[in-house]
Length: 233
Image (cartoon, rainbow, N blue to C red; front, side, top):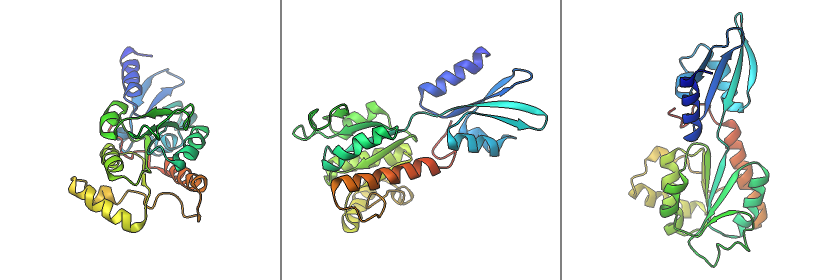
């Protein structure tokens, strides 16, 4: 591999950005394709599908045999609110392959006893989120019902282009939330992407059932997302 290609690949990996290394098997030539370059690439359709699936593969294009090495950052779930729903959602999401972080400045709720083995941050979202670094491969679920905790996280998530942003609460509660977020400068288009009430409509009643509905909705967004959503590189 040429040094320039290796350096570019490592830079994309370090920045948690998706990319595809295209290798011509006959000649050994390689090139790196990022989501922003897929539309104008001769292999646009194949590259887009590879990025959506996240799976490397062997393909044929004309007389060439190519190997596509797909690099996609592992998906993450950031939850605001160390609540009962979160206690069920965090381990299920981990089992589904998501890296989970729970944020809640209320130290009475954010304890290792209630969330064993979970990356737990007993801090305010606007303090900890810049350190975590949200991105298009991160889902955010706001579950506290407390605007002081949820609103900053939602604002950050929308600005970062997270692939899923959901918030707990009734339609009336969400209406008031939209007004507050609009006052923060969030655009109408971004506000329309919030999943609220959060979770699939399966008639969930208990915290565990709500957690199932939320995780199902997150997985649906993860697997159906367009190849180039939110990706500038």
